[in-house]
Image (tube, rainbow, N blue to C red):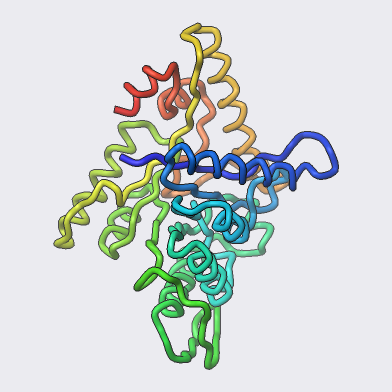
Length: 303
């Protein structure tokens, strides 16, 4: 098991430079993580939240590539339906080049209603957009000559995408999914798996089992490092039950804020998705999914 960092910048609450301040703080955090031996830093991509979540992770990873020398640098995830695939292939290829082959390319279809609403994208198109975008990115990275593409959503004529990634045939592809069908599809295609921070331990174990069986059915050997699991960490310096409840309450509030920021402005419709464990902001669900407690308790929980 390897340990990495996940998330992004957190906006400062006051001051005219609150966004830039939070990004500098994140860079310091990642540098310190590398010094301490963390293996990776994966950044989210979210838009139109009003809460300062990272919206341009590849740009930020280009900066972090110069701040680090050993950490893997990942997206968790790049939401493919929003992106022009040729430009995306160029941007991600640049990060891989600048980092000397340390990019992990995490991809997903998107799930937040406010983002589909903001970009004017029909959620029913998400899967098709995702598939076409990913196919173009992979072709752009593997094709040395010029190529053309006439698709449903994107058209290119006589293009050659530069720079090519350092990693061959391309950076590792990590797929965010929670449904059995999506997980088995990722495994069958030789992609790695990203699992969310909200699902219970039992559900997470079931998802790993689906992935492992699909890998073996495809005639390949299962490697534990091909699966990444995100967890909230609430590390306590005391075993005081009141302090534990206080930290759980803080995370419950954070999850509720994330859920609210995912809504279309003015909408009260509940969130729905077929393959994402959406934000359950109950204390019981939070405690079930998080790594919480004193250092010894956290170690036991991880085991």
